[in-house]
Image 1 (tube, rainbow, N blue to C red):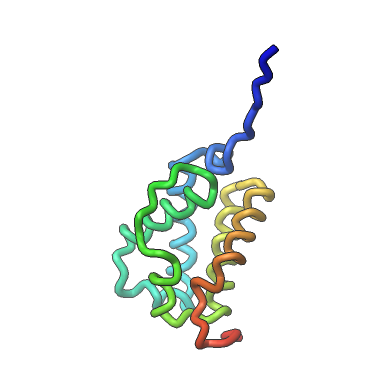
Image 2 (cartoon, rainbow, N blue to C red):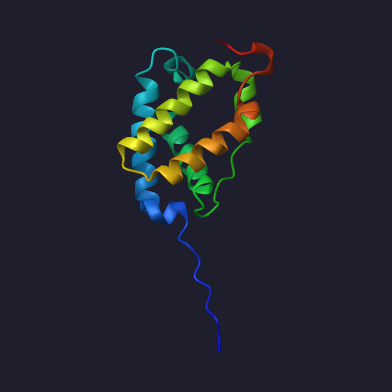
Length: 131
C-alpha cells in the first residue's frame, strides 16, 4: 500500500498567488505613502521597482516561488537610518493591509513573526528605540 502524503498549500497559494500579492503590495504602499512619517523614505525611489521588489520578497515570505535577486535587507535599509518606531509603523500598515484584504489570521501572524525576525536587519542600530 502506498501512502500519499498530502502537503498543505503554501500561504502564497492560500491567498491566491501572484495577483493577491500584487494587490497587497499596491494597497500597502498606498498606506505607507499616505503616512507623513514614512513617505519621505520613498521620495527619490522608483516606486514601480520598489513595488516589484516587495512583491518578490512577500512571495518568498508566503512560501511562493523564490525569484528575488535584489540586495539583502540590511544592505538596502541600514543606510536609511530607520528607527524602531518607523519600522513598527510599517509593520502596522502591512498588518492592516492584509487584514483589509481578508488574509487569514494564521498567515498574518506568520508574516508578523518574520517581521520580528528581520527587524535588526532593517532598523538602524545607531538610533536606539526611536520612541
